[in-house]
Length: 153
Image (tube, rainbow, N blue to C red; front, side):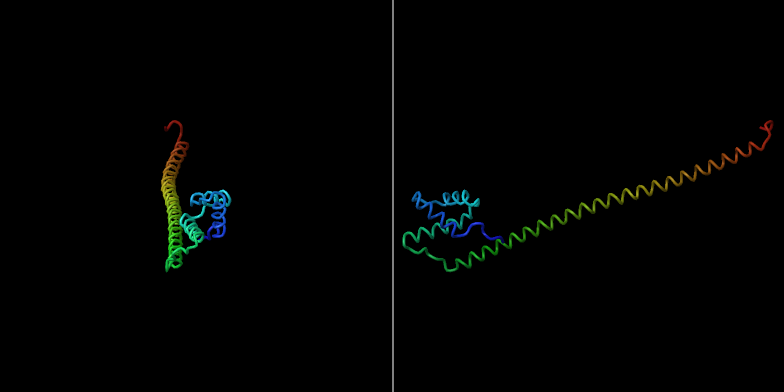
């Protein structure tokens, strides 16, 4: 899991700045300011959590803490990280399978071409043997005709 692009301190600073400027702080406004200043908007849940904390601190009340808030966040983050790793592994496996399917197909095509070339070579050898026999027969006939006298033909 990659670390967040924005720190909690930078988000809190943006909340304070908007509160000082306009007096009304919204999650959308905070995200727009962060995008303009840092090039990242921040996660919606995180922005609103920090915004609610700052509102509670400004009112002098403490935001009700959930008993397992840190454990739930850590559990959610670890679950999301596991899902991201699983997605990456599936992508890698799919890419791997596609690569080997392409290479297998290429090799099958080359094998078929080689087998066809071997069949054509065998046919060419047979044709050459037939032509060699025909040539030998023709040469023998020529030699026989040359030995005979012109009147015997």
